[in-house]
Image (cartoon, rainbow, N blue to C red; front, side):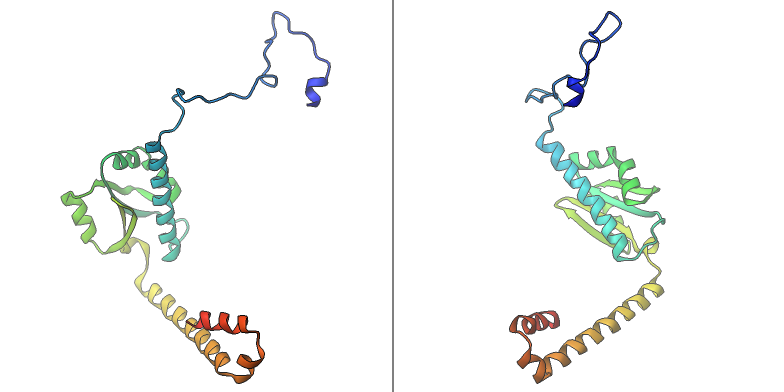
Length: 187
């Protein structure tokens, strides 16, 4: 607003008369090729979901942040083609090993073989699955120890909540909402 009120020279032969600062904001119309189709939106949402699920699996299995993992993605038709077209983005966003990423047609013999390997299966949506081989994800001994520690921790929390709920002092004196919350947590 202030810039519009500053004195400025009138455009001469060497100056452009239509400044970007004075131009109207571009408007989209329905015939514009940049308007996204429902198919393009669905394809992008599928790509987002695939990336999110792979990242979540990495976090769930405590894969080191910098470690690149392998993946086999099984899809069909246009979705497979769109994933193949954006494979470099997927490799970057999901921290995959570019040499170890394959995109296969669903129902093919290769897809069935990939499903048979001991791996984490991620169902992204109807018709799209990803397989992350366990060999590249976790150290089985470390994972077993982590799960044992987690089980001990949860067991202690359960015992603590059960003890609190068995206490007459807690159930009689605490607000009913707090008692219900403790019962819900125990369940």
